[in-house]
Amino acid sequence: MTLLEVRNLEVTYPGGAAAVRGVDLSLEAGQKLGIAGESGCGKSTLALALLRLLPPGTRVGGEVLLDGEDVLAMRWGRVRAVRWAGASIVFQGAMHSLNAVHRVGDQIAEPILLHRRATPAAARRRTGELLEQVGLPAARASAYPHELSGGQRQRVMIAMALACDPRLVVADEPTTALDVMIQAQILRLIEGLVAEQELGLVAISHDLAVLAETCDRMAVMYAGRVVEEGPARTVYEDAGHPYARALSEAFPRIGDPASRFAPRGLPGDPPDPSDLPSGCAFHPRCPVALDSCTVDDPALRVSGTGRRAACVHVGAAQDARSGT
Ligand SMILES: Nc1ncnc2c1ncn2[C@@H]1O[C@H](COP(=O)(O)OP(=O)(O)O)[C@@H](O)[C@H]1O
Ligand code: SF4
Ligand SMILES: [Mg+2]
Image (cartoon, rainbow, N blue to C red):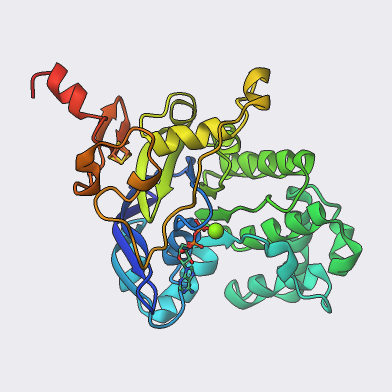
């Protein structure tokens, strides 16, 4: 069974910001799905919706099937159980959210005691194992957060996310605050854990290059929609949607020193989700927009093998070639 299946997910914040607009995604166990897009495109909102962590009053529609069970339709008791044992999340800037006055070992042990009903001795043992799994000595359990470096704190957060053996890990920009070397280490660590334990990983980043290195598949979001989705390397190297193309050009191509010095930026910003442009939401910034783009909003359609994109220039040409 598919580990995670998101169907027609819609999220509107109180006040009217349509932050996620009809997203479909799926992820198998042992697979890594990257979600890319500039700041404000709805990536974190999507992540929060997966675990029903959105603020009260937010309207959420669609389905989030975790092992076939709809998270959006669950009773709260079930949601709480799923948050630890089924799926867990490593947040953007989460390493600052460790409690400063408690030893990190006690913070890792807490969910194990609470949700696994483990004895204190068993929870301590498991905490030591988790620390070693994320590359820290078990003895660091007795450290306070301020005694650890940024990278070590992020490792502690990952240990916490893994504490109750989740099936799905959502990592929302877990490495942005870290330097490049540490980022690479943390991503390799997460990758290793996914492979070893047959987890599913949803990795969120604005950096396409990092996701192309780490993930199997990649979805690019713009204004609350997935505008392109496919094998991660192909989307990065040969994007079909003009936004995905601009975004991949904005990040240095690995192994191509020329592009490192000439990343072509994308002028402007993503739109305000409570005041979206008509037609294709990307049209005010799109270098290849047609007149019709101010009116028509193309749906995602097949753009190649295992690939989909939502642009008037994509798919239509293929349809014409294949005579459909
Ligand atoms: N609690 C909230 N209330 C209202 N609007 C919000 C809230 N959180 C985020 N938004 C808006 O939703 C849009 C998407 O935000 P977000 O999901 O954080 O994007 P990303 O993670 O891609 O940067 C943004 O325009 C943001 O301002
Ligand atoms: S549909 Fe039009 S505006 Fe939207 S990305 Fe394609 S060409 Fe650009
Ligand atoms: Mg975010």
